[in-house]
Image 1 (spheres, rainbow, N blue to C red):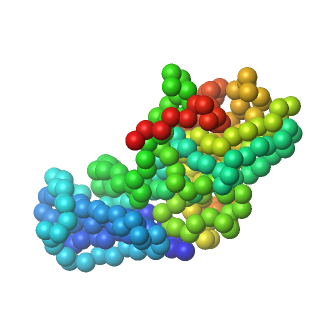
Image 2 (image 1 turned 90 degrees about the horizontal axis):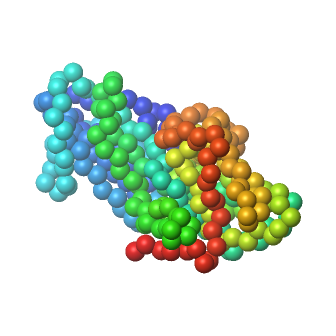
Length: 264
């Protein structure tokens, strides 16, 4: 497991130097010139593992699509910042679930990261690059739903069944059925924009979530914690939530087959 604190920290570059950043399938190159910086990135869908950081004196080549950023000479450092998706994601359990009344279950959901690229001590953001391109989906009814991302990986009941990958952060989600009804569902809508990211001994984790189901005619109670998940020694925060969950917000978590609409 890499030491993510050094991976995500500030990295000073001299003129003419290039830093190469790798996180799973994603590679990012940043070159510092005179009053300008160049950035390129690419994703290898077949490469799931490994992370690295190296600095060379390589010049920007023609084999990549570079973008140019004009900055004064006082800017001499680059920062990479881990981020979770900027809107809700839809995930499926390994199979359709029926949670009986007064029972609970915990899922572990691997969510692909994005990488923010920031300049200088003021941390001015240049761009954000996903490690995986997520497809779009719709959650809820046609008239009252919301645009989400769809995850190809499934929610697992046991963390040891999760796919390896340094480019994913694992979200522990507890679901409690506090109603007198059976809870049937085949998809979950989770909101990673409210989660912090922590470094564990073996992988990255997010803060925990908890959903209390109150019945089909009632809104579920949803809590997204801000602290560390107390799993895998994940105590060091390496990424912060995009948004703060408003008290009393109404958020839907469960979906039925009749409400499902896919966006191509």
